Amino acid sequence: MEQRRHRLGFSWRYPVLSGAVLLLSATPAFAYIGPGGGLSALGAILALFAAVALAVVGFVWFPIKRMRAARQKARQQQGDTSGNPGAASR
Image (cartoon, rainbow, N blue to C red; front, side, top):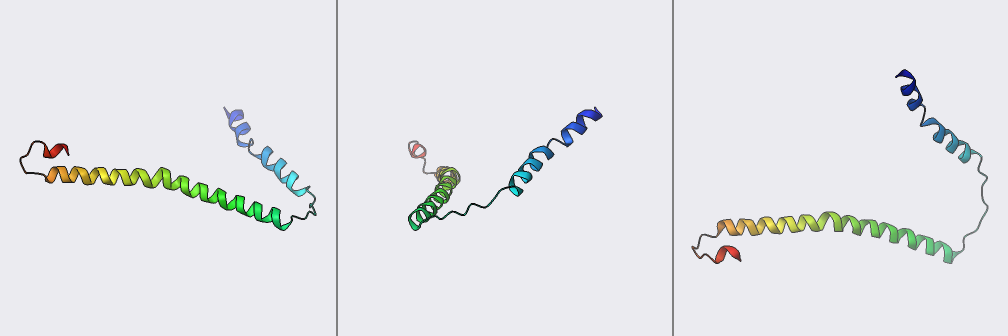
């Protein structure tokens, strides 16, 4: 049991150490990106952020909106005491 804990405790070190070695041994790339490529990259990054924001709105806001409408409809049906049997099914 002790050997198993020992082995699992050190399993994170190998990827971290190899990543650190790769980052420290990297040489800088002296590259130039033109204005067209830079604007294209910037536009792609902004589009990615917009897509993530719209996904959050789609998955969070619209179900909440639907739940609120259902609650409001249920409250209206509870408050309907007109005695008309067809009024509750509206």
